Every structure is written in structure tokens, then in C-alpha cells.
Image (cartoon, rainbow, N blue to C red):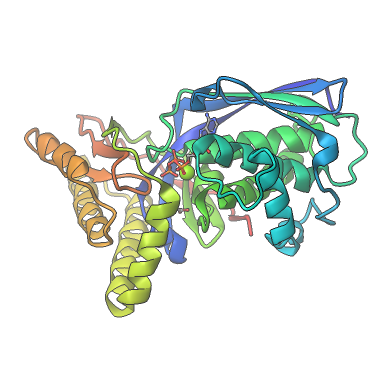
Length: 371
Ligand SMILES: Nc1ncnc2c1ncn2[C@@H]1O[C@H](COP(=O)(O)OP(=O)(O)OP(=O)(O)O)[C@@H](O)[C@H]1O
Ligand SMILES: C[C@@](O)(CCO)CC(=O)[O-]
Ligand SMILES: [Mg+2]
């Protein structure tokens, strides 16, 4: 039974190690950001209109569409992994939604951030509305976030998780944890949310790995390899300083550039991706070892940070502003790497403190898989 209103929230993220390599099947370690989140209000309307308010994108006026213009019944088995896989990014659907978002001008490229966000919502709505028996035909959505957008902190992933959750709740595919907090049910619902948030991320990122939407869905710190997720519980929260260079960049473009470099220099770039994979796996291993000497542990992680930063630079996703952050932090003997897609955006600096690495037994939960 769906309610008439939902308020949903999902965290941003930092990638500690493995960005870009994770797109090519390697391992990444990502952590969710407690205080930086996206919030979405979904409210049922009595008319058959969709109203989308995106004030963070400088949208003065809400998008407003009659539901009658949208195509339906594209996906048969929404609730299984086959659902999205059967759903080809078929051109008719994409063109149809693109023309709706660009007010009827056909063959318009969707390139500004408002249209990308609107297209992502309409795509997910069209897939999930399907033939679900629900009274949520019309709805008003408003999205707000305190995450910097386009800065490498997973704003698109938290946006995608909020949209997927709101629509799955509205169309009755999941129920709120207040109505059903049975552990097994929550696990199933989280997997469905993550599956459809991943579809939304594909619209925004092009060929995402799924690590961003996974950590925005599950929270905490996760180890992610090819869609397999290990939740790391019981870790002492690592302390990082987040620096936003405020240099704008697009994740989709940066990911495409790395793919081109891999196609042009496969023998070299594959070794770099393997080295980045090695850092993620080594980090995972030291979390499991009983290293009680905090200094030794900290020195190892600082080594991973330095190597990780230089390896990402060699993939062409660095930026002078990120190196500047490294240089300034190094004056205080602190170690810094870019986080997310790079090319500007944010850097993370490891903060040492006395009891920084109080070791607690690290427990890996059973694997969750999302694809
Ligand atoms: N609060 C928001 N409201 C509406 N759309 C948003 C919001 N936050 C993010 N988006 C969507 O996500 C896009 C930014 O995604 P992008 O992947 O480029 O950056 P990011 O997710 O912040 O960085 P990274 O992917 O490197 O972590 C925006 O263009 C917009 O379409
Ligand atoms: C750059 C990347 O690895 C992380 C972006 O936050 C892209 C992805 O994994 O989808
Ligand atoms: Mg993103």
C-alpha cells in the first residue's frame, strides 16, 4: 500500500581507492558521506501531471509534463535483475523522452544539467510506471542537496538513489522500512533500489561501474568489484579532509577519455588499472590484518594515497588544482589524492591523529550482488 507523500534521502560518497579502474572490472573502496546528502520529496497529485522541481540546478520554473505524453510498458520484470537488462536503451524511447525534455524539438542533444536531470527522472518514471496498478499517476517531486554538484562526491548517485526509491515506493514495488523492517525484505528492497539507481546513473554517466549508486544505497564503507559488494562493518571512521577545487568537470567525459586511452595504449593502461586494483586489494587486506601499530598502518595508507594519485594522473584525469592541494597538504606532512572522476572536483587528505587507527576486528558481511 503506497502513501501519498514520501521524503527520501541518500548520501554522497568518496572513493578512497579504485576510481576509473572499477569501470574496467577492478576493485574500488568507497565510503558514504554522513553530512552531505540529497533529499527528495515525492507527493501524489490528483491530476495526471508530473512536476519536477530542481532548485539546486538553478531551475527557475519546474518542469511540468502531462503523463499522457509518455510511452509505457517497456519493462516486463521490473523486480528482477533481468528487468533493466531486457530494456535496451532503444532509440525510440530515448528520442521520445529527449523531445519531451527539449519541448518537442526532435533530435536535440540533451546537454545541460537541467535537461540531464529531467531526462533521468522521465526515463526512470517511464520504465517503472509500466502497468503497475497505482493511484500515483500524477506526482510532484522536489530535490534538494547539500552536495556540491559535479565535484566527485557522488551527487548524481545520491540523486539517482532518491529517484529510484521514490518511484519504487510510489508504484508499490517496495514499502517504507517503517511499514516493513524485516531484514530480508530490506535487503531485497535495497537491491531493487540499487538496480534502478544504476539505470539512472547510466543515463548520467554513460558507462558507470555501479560503485557510486551502491555506496549511496548501502551506506558505510564498501568494497566493490564488478557488481559484487562487500560491506565493511566495524571500521573506525577514517578521517579525511575534503577539499573542493571548484574546477567543474563531467564524470561521463572523464570516463570516456580513460576508455579512449585504454583503447589507444592497452598494454600500458591495463598495467596502470592493475596497479590501481592492487592498491584497493592491499588496502582491503590491511584492514583484515591485526596491525596494531597505528603509525605503520597510517604510513601504508599514505603510500596507497600517493601511488593512487600518481596512477590516476597517468590516466589523464588529474588537474593542476588537485596537485596544488597535494602540495599544500604535503607542507604539513599530509597525503592527498583526487577522489571521484578527477579533472578537478574534490581531493581527500588523510588526517593522522593519535588514536587514529584504533584497530577493531573488521567483519565482512556476505556479498551482495547488484548485476
Ligand atoms: N541536487 C540535484 N538536483 C538535480 N540533479 C542533480 C542533483 N545532484 C546531481 N544531479 C544530477 O547529476 C549530475 C552531476 O553528475 P556527475 O556524475 O557529473 O557529478 P557527481 O556525481 O557530483 O561527481 P562524481 O560522479 O565524480 O562523483 C548533474 O548534471 C545533474 O543531472
Ligand atoms: C570514475 C568512476 O570510477 C567513479 C566516479 O565517482 C566512475 C564509475 O565508477 O562509474
Ligand atoms: Mg556522478
